[in-house]
Image (cartoon, rainbow over all chains, first blue to last red; front, side, top):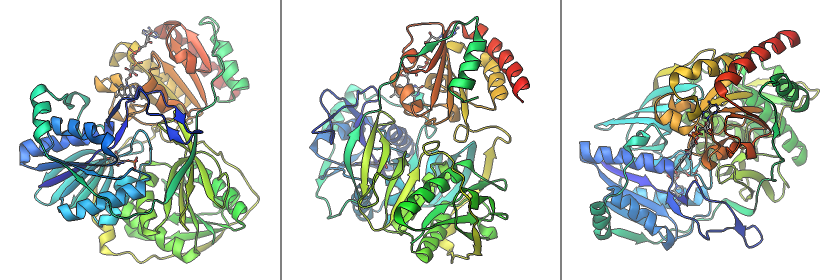
Length: 248
Length: 322
Ligand SMILES: Cc1cc2nc3c(=O)[nH]c(=O)nc-3n(C[C@H](O)[C@H](O)[C@H](O)COP(=O)(O)OP(=O)(O)OC[C@H]3O[C@@H](n4cnc5c(N)ncnc54)[C@H](O)[C@@H]3O)c2cc1C
Ligand SMILES: Nc1ncnc2c1ncn2[C@@H]1O[C@H](COP(=O)(O)O)[C@@H](O)[C@H]1O
């Protein structure tokens, strides 16, 4: 089984978000970048398929050279090969097109992406990729087993979950639940050393026009001070929520 | 030309998020000088839709579409959009809509913007305001394709009633076998429990509650308020509560009217996920907890004393205001 894991390179969850150039560019100054958390769950599940079912695991990112340390981290966790499509990520469609191009050539059985990236929050790349490849698609995937060419997946729905079956090739939008938090792996010294020798292939992009474009960013308005209520006067809290906030 | 809306229903009722999306679509239709067409799946009485702005309903009745199926629904919606020559398709941000939207966008060669929080800044160019960086910022995004798919966040726009009637028309899309290649084998869904996605009020507990055995008071409070229950990440990581309740940057987003955080410190990753809730109340015994900086109302004190008391008082309040 050949697996491709899509890795989005995103600011660490503790990052302060600021913008430059008249609020048109994300300010990367002092920002630590990591593997998108949803992708890390997917990558860890891919490691399970590698170890238990002999799968090979490639990781891929669409982005500039600055994303290579993130791909190296994925190699250190245990992926076999890394691919970087050498073009900045502009929007979900353009990224999906680039990924589809590589995926077609690679003949992958299973493509694991994340439900959503924590920077762009598009929630669009995996679905678009599946549609472009005419592959089956399971979103918000929280469980995945493969036998032969048949996948059994569990999908989170609003208020519960459902089990589905689908034939490979399959694309999933994954999240926590594919593996548990405690299954995540921190690369060890050996993994890091080995990752340096593993292939990281840079491929040139195909020509694609983005469909959307960020014109500018804006930060939320600062919040007013909290109104404190005495614990012995909870009636006041209820009154405030009723008459002032009008939420109960 | 009309603005197309995917209308979701559950147990024979239209979802509130879909009615909100209809109100949104009506506003967009007015900007564009056109009408709103809603697409329903196996819905019977569609008269309610006119009240929120639908001019015409395309009723799909097909037993194969009884249960949600992303590929088949996307195909059906694509054919509806073709028939109506729609330039804008609007969906909610429910789990099902988020599943369908990117598939539909590719089928329509449409650009897609998700998590949209207000009506377009302008119709030409078509620019929408959406959240990015998990609620830490907004981005103004231009969609440059001829057809646009817009995913509207819950509670971002609100319901607007209009004086209107919807005409209804049966519509039978041509579905192929490939549309049914992902098959649902079982569904496990809590009945009569409010979900975080639909809830107006969410009551959430953190590590300050010490252990799963103490969640009774959280559930009681939620029941009194008709609220959904949620939790912080460590609480679900430790297995005190199911993963489906984990909210925050790496969990579910919460866009409720009221979010009550109990024994939650207010870490940046937690706040990112709940920021778009309208009103936030925090109950915490540490006055220095960062959550107080992000909240509208706060009570400094022991949750084990405050929560049961608050619940009693709310019950009295509800009884009086019923
Ligand atoms: C990559 C990454 C992603 C993350 N994503 C998320 C996420 O999506 N969601 C999330 O929630 N977290 C997330 N976190 C974790 C986050 O950083 C915090 O660790 C977490 O939110 C803390 O949970 P807590 O507030 O329940 O616990 P704590 O920080 O331990 O806070 C407990 C609080 O309870 C209060 N308390 C104690 N006893 C009482 C009492 N008797 N009465 C009232 N109050 C009391 C304490 O004063 C304290 O403020 C993430 C972390 C990382 C590294
Ligand atoms: N630039 C990228 N390179 C590779 N994969 C990506 C990229 N951007 C997004 N993805 C994948 O698509 C998922 C969803 O991203 P998004 O649609 O931006 O929310 C991510 O979790 C990744 O798996």
